[in-house]
Image (cartoon, rainbow, N blue to C red; front, side):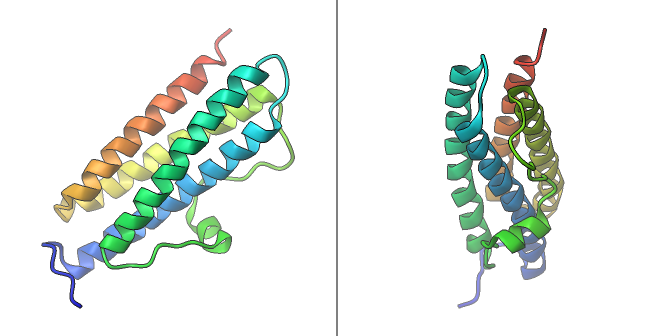
Length: 156
């Protein structure tokens, strides 16, 4: 059945492609954060273990919201590691970094996700896609706040 939600097919495709990149960044950041939650060690163990759990749970919920928005626009959401790896700008870690390096890596990841959301925001704004704009605004707020909170742990 034809989709008639007030956004052209061309614009829906452009926004869905951008959201696919956002999904890939979010999923990669989820995976990295969960990996760090399992493997963090050192004097900040308790703080980071709990903080990472809160963060990966939030990211897991966001993955579903982003994928469902892509589907609402009429496109399939990428779901394999191969597809997601091609779309993300966030790199995986090799091995298990020290706690402070985990924090630095997550700061970079959240800042990258915020930048991706801003890029997609421009496409959604041009398409007058208020639903996507609302979601992206919320995602930017979460990523920027999380990056700030993580950066604050690195202050000496």
